[in-house]
Each structure stands twice: as structure tokens, then as C-alpha cells.
Image (spheres, rainbow, N blue to C red):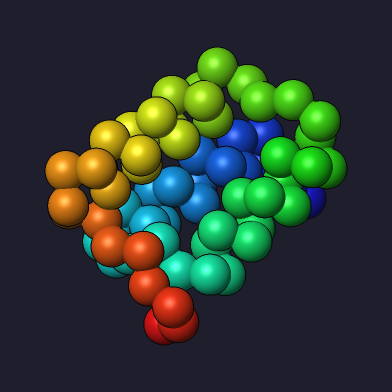
Length: 64
């Protein structure tokens, strides 16, 4: 069973490893497409991820 805020959990994973991998990005995109909307919790998580990336604390990487 999948939990309710999958996108938030994926963002937490990226924050923990300090990298946005293609796998995490693909999973986030899949969930956005599957759900067709974004919850407030997931939206805030994505805002935090983008903020951390803008600040240089999270790197976008080509692979793990």
C-alpha cells in the first residue's frame, strides 16, 4: 500500500542524500501524472526542494 504523501517522501529522500537523481525525479513526475493534482503537503515539499536546489545544497545529478 502506498502512503498518502509519496511526493513528500521522495523529496525527503532527495534532501537526505543531498541529490536529485533521475530515479527520484521520474518517480515524482509519475506521481504527479498519476494523481492529476498536488496536495498542499506535496506542494510545500517541492517548494522546499526547489529552494534547496537554488541555494546549491541539493545537486541535480545524471545518475546515482
